Structure formats: structure tokens, C-alpha cells
Amino acid sequence: MTHEVVPQTMGQQFGRRSWAEPWKIKMVEPIRMTSRPERERAIREAGYNTFLLRSDDVYIDLLTDSGTSAMSDRQWAGLMLGDEAYAGSRNFYRLEETIQRYYGYKHLVPTHQGRGAEHLISQALIKPGDVIPGNMYFTTTRQHQELAGGTFVDVIIAEAHDPADPHPFKGNVDLDKLEAVIKRVGADKIPYISLAGTVNMAGGQPVSMANVRALRALCDRYGIAVYLDATRMAENAFFIQEREEGYADLPIAAIVREFCSYTDGAWMSAKKDSLVNIGGWLAVNDDEVFDTARNLVVVYEGLHTYGGLAGRDMEAMAIGTEESMQDDHMRSRIGQVRYLGELLTDWDIPIVQPVGGHAIFLDAKRIYAHIPQNQFPAQMLAAQLYLDSGIRSMERGVVSAGRDPATGDHRYPSLELVRLTIPRRVYTQAHMDVTAESVKAVYDAREQTRGLTMVYEPKYLRFFQARFEPIA
Ligand code: PLI
Image (cartoon, rainbow, N blue to C red; front, side, top):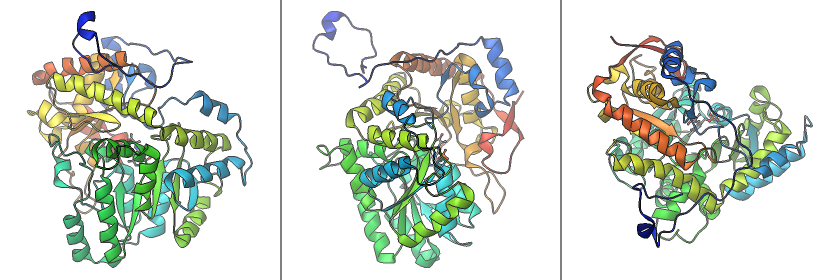
């Protein structure tokens, strides 16, 4: 894969060194381009919500990187090694050993996916009236914290809320902001800090090692635990290796281990970094927290040696975890995201900068500056992209932010974004070119585009199922 965008002659190309993915393709899955009238019907029937489209009506699916990655031949072979015993499956022990080795935590509880683990940690640690500070909310994480009676408080650095700010670690916790929250509510009201490695809603932005180390020191002073959302922690480690002094020569795996060592445990959606279509886990060091979580998992997920998964899923997850820590894998994974980002940046299309780990985030506030936030500009931008080319993306703005449970009003995030999320090992450079060209076409037609009105709103995580109609 090359970073060159402008066509060049062979002479100009002399001396150039491109890089390519560390794999070749063994099996392909056909995809189909639809006609414009087909897409007009499909998006209308989907209530202008890309979550409600049928995937058969989608050409390039950039809705999410969750559960959409391509498994390797090793992982597929691993499926045949599934030990489907109800209790004590050998694949569980392999997974447990793998997570201990790569993430360093003492105890493992498997879950069917990330939110299953979020449920367990929230129920185990949060009491009604508690406050959970974190580096920007994530939809399902905050929902589980609220359902357990807690209130999430954002303590990410201010730069994270500005899509144009070039800060290299926009996922960092603002330690002064956090200390002010601790002093205001009291350490006994804070069961843990909710720290995410690469911050999804901020644009896939990393946390530095210096920041997590300082966070640990601060929390030790107040006796507060730190739990990590490790969903894209391997991607976070890539940025530390690239940008933080002293880490350039350390492998991703060593950086992940050190980062996790400053935390008390982690929840994981293995559907992202770990290259599987389903799976997750909770891992903790504290024996009592483990005991509670292992007891709760049998109520909500399944026995503590399968947690809602088949034995074969745990095998694929263990192999995927190992693959996710390989430096050449990560370089090509993030390199592909950057390739798309560089095309759009060269064409002056407003995106979140710097480009993060798993996606390009289009800045709908700047693209549709004429559409007020209560007319859902990012929701409309995602619909327009689908209409133009059949590319599916996702709103990450006011719809995703939901309503404030205390006031019932929309929460208006400063970031009103559309996420073009890149599945791992699935699409080619040509797919990225087609995507960039479609974004450009939609951008060029921006002034003719109007907003949306919401006509159906579910109570929880509304972005998944809400319906909209265009404003005439
Ligand atoms: O989708 P789950 O339940 O496996 O994982 C929930 C979850 C937790 N943390 C973070 C940072 C996530 O990104 C996440 C899920 N993300 C999805 C589905 C996404 O499209 O980004």
C-alpha cells in the first residue's frame, strides 16, 4: 500500500518504497453495488438510520469495526479445535492463559461481547449515587454505569472536544479536572476511573503512557481503582510506540503489558482488536471483584468457563489476541485508516485530526454548518453517503449522545461526527479510494442538503433504532 495519491510516472516513482499488508487473500466474499433508486428506497425504509439497512443493500460496509474483521486461516482452523463441554472447556484455559500473558491481569471472566463485561463490572462495583469519571463517554459503557445507579463525568482533556486540535494524545485524562471531581464528590463516591485505550467517540484517539502512569499515582493517593476499556488497547499501543519518547523500540505487546500494569482490570470487546466476530471478557486483579463477577456471569451470560460463548469462539479469540499484538499487523491496520485520512485531508474535507486508530471521523458540524445540531447533521451526512455510493457509515453526534437522564433534554456533544470505520483485513486500497471519492461527491453537494426530524425514539441507546424523516 502506498501513501502516494497523485499519479506519477515511473521515473518519479524511482526510489519509492511502498509497504503492503502482511497477508494475502485466500477466500473472497462478493459484494454488490445497488442502483440509486434502490438506495433511495432502502434508506427511506430504514428511517434514514444506517443501522436499520439490510447489509445486502450495502456496498462497502464501514458501519463498524466491531465483529466485522476477517479471521486468519489459523483462527478458522482453531474453530475446529472447539471443546464444547459445558464446564471446563480446554479453550477457556487457553484463552485465560493468553489474556494473562498479553494483558497481565490475574483473573478472567469470558463474556459474549464487550457490553456483557461492562454489565458485570458496573453491577459489581457501582452503587446508586456513585460517580464514574472517564476519558469521554462510550454509549454502552455509560448506559451500564447509569443502569447501575452511577453518573458518568467526562474528564478527558479539552483538546479532545476540538476536531482540529493536533494534540498527539487526545485521549488523555485531564488530571486537574479529575482531582477537582474527586474533591467535589469525595473519593468514597468514586468506585473506579473508567479509562479507555484509544477513545472511540473522540476519533480513536490514544492515551499516553505518561498519562496513565500519572493517573495511577493520583488514584493511589485517593485509594481509587482504575479500570480500562481495553477494546482497542493494542491500537493505543501503536501510537505510544510511534509518538512517545522511549517506546520506539518496544514491541506493541510489551507496551500493552506496561499500560495495563497501571490499571486494576479491564473489560474487552474482542470484536475489535482481537479479530473475532463475537466475544469479550472481563479481567481483574482483585480476588473479591473477581468472585463477584464470576458469580454474576452465571446469571447473565453463562457458566464462568464460557460466558455465553462456544468453545470454538474462545479458541479463535485466543489466536486473534496473539495476532492483534503483532507489530506488522498493526502497522498495516492503522496504515490503511491513515491512507483514507490522507486522501480526504488532501481534498480539504474536514475530518478529526490527527487520524486515530480505527476510523476516519467526518466533521459534520463543519461540513453542514447550515444544519443546526437538533436537525441531526451527522445522521443526514451518513444517509447522504449511503445514497451516493452504498457506503455505510455511522452517526457519532447528538443522536448517539442520547438524552440527559436528569433533564430529559438532548445532550449536545461538541463533536458531531460521521464515522467511517475500517474493519480489519477486509477491504483493499481500491475500496478506500472509492470511499474517499464518494465523501468528496457528498461534500461538494453539501449546500443543497437539509436536516432531519426524529420520528421514533427508543428509550435506551437510541442511535441503534431511531427513525428519521427529511425536513422538506
Ligand atoms: O459491542 P460490544 O458489546 O462488543 O462492545 C461494547 C464496546 C465497549 N467499548 C468500546 C470502546 C466500544 O467501541 C464498544 C463497542 N463498539 C462498537 C459496537 C462500535 O461500533 O464502535
